[in-house]
Structure formats: structure tokens, C-alpha cells
Length: 112
Length: 113
Image (tube, rainbow over all chains, first blue to last red; front, side):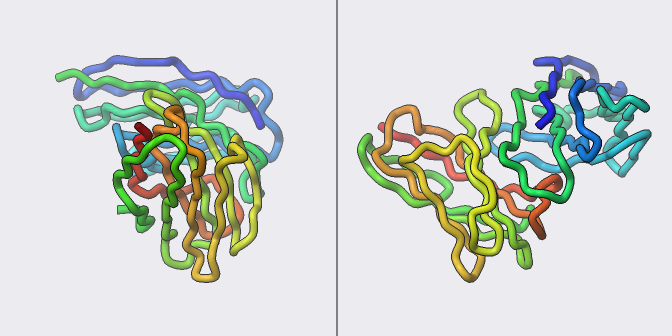
């Protein structure tokens, strides 16, 4: 599976747009990019998934350049409740995986 | 609420003991995944079951085992417990074998004293 690299932590303020970038240089042709959010002592929650270009849903946008070697999760107008750990995963879509790697994630802290 | 349930919520036991964690997937989901998350660590994939059969294996110790029953609930058995096994154990489910959008349960916090 493709290895991912994310910043360990980020800080921002309420109302700002936050962009978290994930590097995945050895992404494979059949790999999808998926982002999860995790609050302390809770299970991760799926945020968004994409393959290429841009994907948008009610909570976030995912930008994937043409070479797919990186991706950016964009959270518009963050609030205190967006303080969480964000994980980027890269792996094949609908197939079993021998290893599923969440990595250390990015710890996002939002300040008033 | 993801629809995935896990019991118990908390478990405190002693070294050398054996415990069983239980997971009920979302209604209709065939795949169940188990993860371990130690303090301030990322999630470590342990094992996946699909419709009763083992589908994928991650960093699961030999002291740990799992199974998925005909009603699709799953149990994770941890034996000869060590202090380092203290962690949050999460279960997740997906409708089919694909894993990308997993629905996670609330977790079981295991403390080994």
C-alpha cells in the first residue's frame, strides 16, 4: 500500500479555511484517497473519498492533482468542534487489503 | 451513531488473563475489521472478516484471535494479556469486502493492570 505523509499537527482559528495536505508519492493506479476524522476516545468517522480532481460534500472538499501524488483536505470555516485528528489513507477501492495503514494523522487544533 | 455496537465499553483486567470483545456490525454489513489504538498512537489494523471468513490480517499478535459468527457479529479474543495490550479496540464494518468507507464503533477501552 502507498505510504502517506501528513503534518503532525496544525493550528487554526474559528471561521478560517483549513487545508491539510497528504503526500503519497507511490500511489497506485487503483488506489483511492480517503480521509477520516477522529475525536478523542471515539472511533474514526469517514469524511470524504476521491480518486482524482476534486470531490466536495457537505463537510469538506478533497483536491487531487493530476499526478495524484498528493491530496489536500479542505475544511471551510472551521469551528472549535473541528478539533480532531485527521487521517489520510491511500489504498485500493473495493478489494481486500493485507495491511490497512492509518498512520499518525494530523492533529488539528482550532482556537476561538 | 454509526450503527456499529461494541461491548463492553470498558474492561479492566490483570496480566495473564483472557478477555473477549464483542462487535455487532451495521445491519447488512458483511465485513468486520478490528483495530488497536494505544495511547496517542494511530490505529493499527488487526484483522478483517468477511461473511464469516478471515479476509485480511494485519499486525495481530498470536495471542489474539478473532472470529465472525453466522449472524455476522464478531469477537476478538485477547489472551495472556500484557500491560502493553492496554489500548482502545475498535471494530468497523463495511457493506462488502471493500474497506474504504468504514463505519466505526465506539470502541472498548481495555486496561491491563
